[in-house]
Image (cartoon, rainbow over all chains, first blue to last red; front, side, top):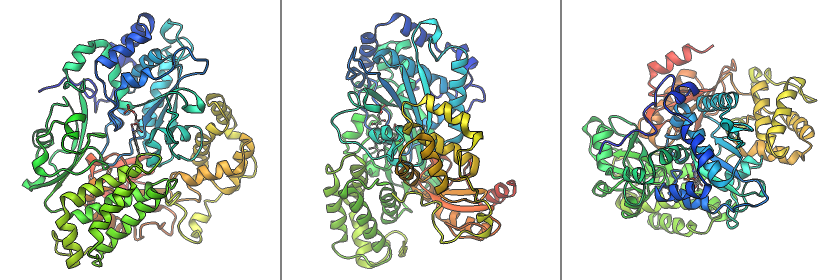
Length: 428
Length: 179
Ligand SMILES: Cc1cc2nc3c(=O)[nH]c(=O)nc-3n(C[C@H](O)[C@H](O)[C@H](O)COP(=O)(O)O)c2cc1C
Ligand code: FES
């Protein structure tokens, strides 16, 4: 199962972010060839056959997304690169921005050719100083040497890139909030439809893709769709970056075939449980993904594999918890995040997240009521599907998962006024 | 979201922070070139707002109400557009902050690795509580959401740098090495 390291071979390098280093590795050859020789439809077809799935969270087929962009319209087409990386437990795009900024730019150029786009924005989360610095440096170098600008590599193809710094708001990772933010506004998600492919940035057709998704694109055109698909599983081509954190011996980032099981990820790659502790629970795809029990970890770490256990691969951020963790306390950390980050536009999300937070705080303080566990579940269920954007769902799913799988801990805390795990009340 | 919650707490500014307040009543010439470049780069004046706010914060450490007005006039956009963007995003400081803004992650992966104890320990080391600034105006302490460095939990950001795998000794070294 040793997958080639398409993205991560140079993570940690002192030099891989420089243009010359990228060129020595054959960098920009694919963009040059595709722009000069390949028809847009062929590029889209290849990405479709490669079964590249969006790495931002939803796993949407990238080739299909690109095919929604109208051809030959009179409005400009934009590309918005999602480098907001806000989903707790996720830290992969940071590595690409820092160590392979030119690989991302090359993927963006190929996308530009495929959808007829000549201007791209890279929306980077505001806290990422070093990644932003590296990305800006790469863009400047690429302009200077003709890999970006009015005439990319002498092909006559124009392509401009702007690095845009976010302002610290999780919601701006949601694609339409990101567009609002790029227009200088508060990040309030938009109602869909219309979808950004038709009405996106400044009312123009817009592709929004995650950093990892785009960085994989040059590898698809280089290897060919079939070879790329073979690196993955039937439903999902290529390699995947997994982020593992929490109670493991070697937290970190691992590029693997999505055929890897979660158990292997934890035991073989992340070095197993810290201090030989016993595993209790895993959040498999960033904080929003429903929690899994130890007996559910033999599932394949692909988008489809995680669906089969009623969770999701999401942003592939695995948060591993050992038996010392009180799930009510962990729930509090999770729900305070969503209550803090709800943009406030939709009542169910704005009020529901705060309400659930207050219930969990009451339980932790030892004042839980008999009906609190059921209420958490029912409030969560009433949020799902009733909001403009999926932040509401993202807040509801973990609550539903925790209550379903660790119900006894919630009920014990409510009944006894203290944690089943630590024997104490926490007093949030 | 609790917009601007990093820097709006506290009724009055300590003397040390008040000393960092600056008066800006017209558009600063030194930012003119950058502003023109931003306006050329973005499709609309409003879209150039966020990067222009960043430019002001880099220069002055925060964005005052006065600066908001100056920016609105310069971009020829309504003041409320500037105001709502400044207050929506948590990273724009609406008041001066300590020279070193210590932001400790309190999200799940960090909490699993002891962030709660880390926060208490840093409060002890600095002699202030979360949300406060030291009397000399050097340090402001905040707890923030996941900073996408969970592999180095527990971690914090001090101004533009990330520091991971924190323990008391490392925190002392880090703070000791700052101006
Ligand atoms: C609340 C919320 C936060 C999100 N945060 C991110 C993020 O930080 N990075 C990201 O790439 N996608 C994020 N997404 C997913 C994006 O909306 C979008 O699906 C993605 O950027 C599309 O790119 P992809 O098809 O390449 O995955 C978020 C979605 C929601 C609902
Ligand atoms: S949880 Fe602390 S950096 Fe992600």
